[in-house]
Length: 591
Image (cartoon, rainbow, N blue to C red):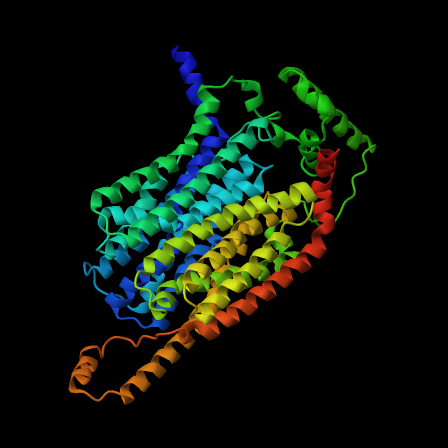
């Protein structure tokens, strides 16, 4: 009995679905950057910043969230647990120090030093994201779209999740949210440090995968609907603390639910140990180069009747086929064409990808699309206040939920595009970018209820970028150097917000605020209003009305349209690549 349980627990620990579920949990705490709209007001008031200074902190946050050169190098050198430990340390030190400064427990630092702290704290996310994505994409090479979409979705949803947990802990004290951002992800990262990693075993598509992914998608939809309902109830009705704790407890139950998948596979289903092992555990000893590519395709190209054979016979047949291919290549029966560089769909290094037009089209489309969306996310608190919405946190939570659904839905829809139609998944990206353009227009016009509609459209569109683009780059430029390629693409976020938020949005906001303050000064006539001006002289001017972000949002809408055009150009250029990658499997499905 003891040996049986030990075998089952070993199978459970090695199960790739356990790694996937643990990665979802870590990602639920890893999107601390999306809480900047909630913590920026308390930073602004505590340190007496104006909008331009706050925008610089936002750019530092975006740089920390997206600059992953060091992350990519360390993730290649360090084991997954070592990279996670680095991320935990950066998150704790950066945001922990910010909390000490905001609460007066540490002396105030100049703006440049605060930017460094925000950068360091948020840079911990890059380690969480890189380790979880690289591990799970390697564990699920045949399900890249859903896996990337779900993981990036939970990172986007973390803003709403952490807001709900924060409401349970100590809602009136806004500075405590910064403390939770420093401590929460660090504790979760340490708890999962030895679970999230690439595992050896069967990595092809299994019949049970469809059911498992359906269950995960159901949990995602339930989680988003539940958070939306709880958020609206808490905003409209005053609840006592015990009810808030009950809501949060249900949230944890929903988050834990996916663990049922690896548990059922390991403890309640028939074990087939040989199938869990890699078919060729010693592939590293094979000759590098073209023979490695040939052998890697054997699993995909084997005859259909091989799957019906016993495990031992199947392994024997595949080994024989591999041996014949190697011998044929050795005697020249299989012609190997030498090329200077890889073709699209093969494994590129970062240097090789950087000289390809397709890579830069993808980068620029991401820069314009996600950069414009993140500009809205970073300025959401000030946009809400300018349109006279009192509870800005509700829109931070809402855009986090829609961001989550955009990531999950983007991965799902783009997977249908490539699997069923063998068409480039960036066509779905173009559709989401046009959706974002309408969201920017709603904010610009300031119509009644515009914030609710705009958070929906911008959140969905922004989130879709981070499920479609990573999957597309892995298909066009390979999995071998996926970490380096992904971390370079993430530079699009800070590059966009550096111009769109720090220069354009904040500059227009401060100009309109000063203009309104000057016009208000000309109408000040009473002694009481003059005294009020003296009391509030130290506060930076505030802007009110849709004019504050009108020009900014019009420009962002135009940038989204440009991004959609670039995505469609990429669709035209890569149609043949996707036809070769997925056309054969599509044809078999149709037959």
